[in-house]
Length: 460
Image (cartoon, rainbow, N blue to C red; front, side, top):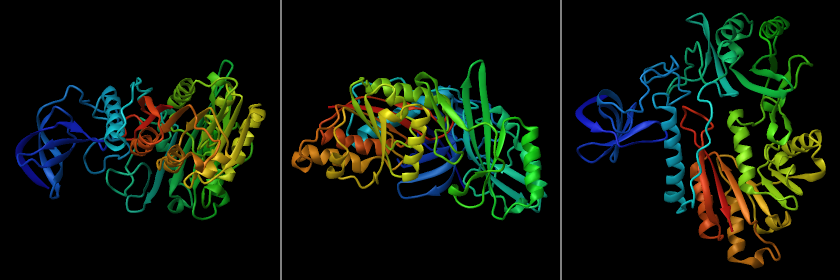
């Protein structure tokens, strides 16, 4: 590190929660710990031709949005700090504003698209929101202890976490007991991870909470270790142990019985069973609001046919089926499609839904036409986005003979977990396929992190 004596004014912040300034030579400087409006000094650690990167070492003007004492004792810039959160030093409301601007900037700079209306960002609880997490487990023989938590900042080492403020309190309270449990197991040095998945099933007069803990084990567990897991579950109400000897497909319950893992969408009367290694949204509070907003924006009528692209387990498909005449869910995995069908059946919606497995990253106009005409689309892709799908629509718009008789949907609601790929796909839909982007907003699914989700509406 090279200490720089000049004072730099932080102009903005990037998605890695680094302040952005320019030094006296006009070079961009990325500053860990710096917030917009602050004047800081920096110790520079990396230098390139066009930019430098360093850590704030002194400050003479502080941002009004700075959080003086972040809630988590493991947050910070120092060595050993937890790398799970990057924005705890910035007020939660300001975090949302940053993410909203990221969505706007990406749409314009990458896609040349300006939404006609910016919707209020979707936000919810700032703490205790995370119902899914993957904790690394490390037995440190030299220290004679087990560490369980996220990785340290910019490191492969596991942070020495005693609490975690972004998971529910019941889970945070288990971190130390889990360390003691693993320390006492015969296979403690062959247990690399514990995955958390919580289900919250609303019931009359209350709710049942299931805390599924998936233990990854590299060797078969001896009976003594299994007995220790059972004793831990008995001492912690709601805990359900699952074992994962190899890949995600090998996950199974330690013992049969107990409550089912599921989440609910009360507005639509839908219950969604899932396995702990399935992809479900990390934040159930935000997911509930997101599904409701997406369906209101889609404006589905009872006589309409809707396609849900990248349907997963049916998170949007099943609520859509309570409003539309027919819903087709399309996903890349036959296994997921089968699970979606089962979820539709269990919710009494199988007569209004159908599901197809297809490689959605290799869509063509011919395949698009084969799925038939739909009045509305719901698109919810992974981080890679829906480029092949958007391109197929754009190609047909340029040459209708590629899909004779096929007409594009009147309205598309696109739910994104990557503003860059949303912007890329939006550019095709708006600038080539003839859509207008009528609305967009950020979705703060992961408070205190750099992750940005968003939702956008396209009309033709």
